[in-house]
Length: 551
Ligand SMILES: [Zn+2]
Picture (tube, rainbow, N blue to C red):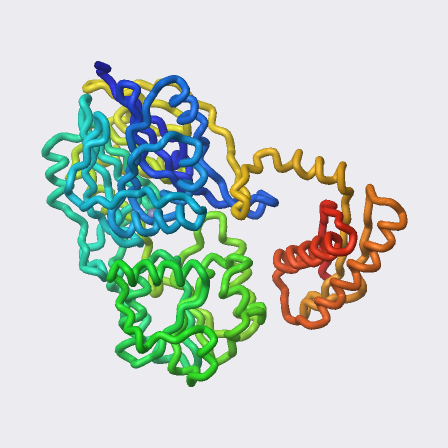
């Protein structure tokens, strides 16, 4: 039998997202979480990022066994990579608590995969090979969030994924401090702790502090009250629903992700929504504006979100007017600052009353601050600590905090992704450093696009390239003149025909729409129109490259 355990972060180290943590003992592997990362504006043509799973694939080939997986909570950066990673690996049992199971299984079904996640109760240990895992309830921004207490032959490990300590959570489901303290009494060899809020002094405020601000805002709103938050934040939805209910409003959910969570939460019996007060988006127009509270997806300013479509005047059923109030009940996820900013700018330009989250009025973080972390450390008294799920600055802040608490420099381990640490009962040693690739995927096809540059070149070599230069009026987003179409790698005749046909199609489409100033959206639209037209008429798929010039 081995006398050490190996811990290897394959994702979620030096980064907030893409969580995938490996615990390995005697050639048997336990995986904690399997999450996505999100592409930023610089990663053109990429939707999602995945943790690099090649270590796991190789381990299986070498005869190691993946004995199981546990998932801490229902956020995409903790379970969203399942449909991409599971098909690469042999089958093994996967456990999560009730709401997480529902979210993860729904995701697998979306990808036509078997919903294989098994529901486990809090506090009930599950034996996974040599690991005995107990889910401990904590508070976060999605229901049924867990920490995992992992007993192994070399000691007990505590995987402290995303959490905050909310003493008055909206749903009454408090963190199980007794179970955490009991884990501490049994001895914790190492704590892997999230570190996102470690640079924030004090204690993260309770969800309860928001209620009065929502009540006041709804009272002051003369038109439709529109609130946007992270779709999975069920307790936030409940909170606004309760206020809406006490004021006798009708409520409406808009946007696919939000409606999906609404249905799941309702099935789970945790959404406080009276059926007779819910209306569909196409019914909103029939009700007095002041009587309607809308929950709309798109708090991150996503291009294709329901909120962005409303702002751009492209939503089929719902428009936003100057009587309405938009409350952004969320903070930008790191990397989304620019798109959130342009959403706010656009609403302001339309003279819409947009309420941002200033002084924690409409949003409190789901992540702990320094005192939350100190409380966890006090209860657990781990021998050593590994900060996880934060950028390097969060991890360093955590280290400073832990050292202020009394830990020695060598007992707080700052790791980079892929760095193995071997824990024996007494010591921790750095092991191998696994090189992790950046793995990009196309959300629709699920195909890896790590070679996307090559892919583009191949397409250009086979099908040519069409550049479209469109001059757009900066005032109202209209097309200033016929777009210029430049085709290369096509015959002169074809190029001429494509020029005529594509500029006609684009001019026609733009003649019916106005007041769009979201350049990303306009570029995407031009590309789609051109690709569709060129394929329909010429059965060709050149690389279409839109250039939008603001004049
Ligand atoms: Zn989370």
